[in-house]
Image 1 (cartoon, helix red, strand yellow):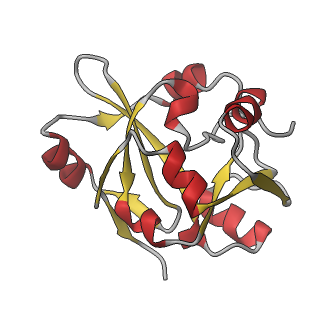
Image 2 (tube, rainbow, N blue to C red; image 1 turned 90 degrees about the vertical axis):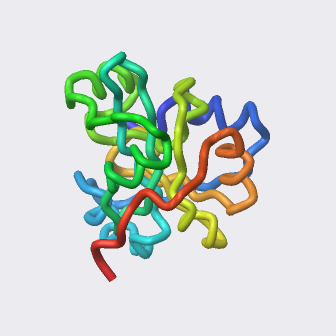
Length: 159
């Protein structure tokens, strides 16, 4: 498999310039960092959440970080929890399991983006499989996530 058709259509429809980085298969964002030889802080990953009413939310955080549900819920004045894995697979049925692209607009999802991602010159993200990363400029990433809330919702785990 290559990039999800939904992702390529979404990026091209918005006039985003991007390139892809192909790497050996990996099944974690840190594994992807090693396989693609990209610093983990430059890889954005998606964490899919929902609240007790079934409202879904995508948190976009750096691959070297862990989502702080406490911070997220305080900032959003909500009670979000991780979505069940099977539900995530259903939401992202155009992607290989576990290869969720952190592009909430492509899936009509509300989102919050960790503000640490705003400090990078360029960003890499999962494209729907475990073999390719999408490489974007900060300007294009910002444009794609302009409608998202921004805040500090993760803590760095690895240096």
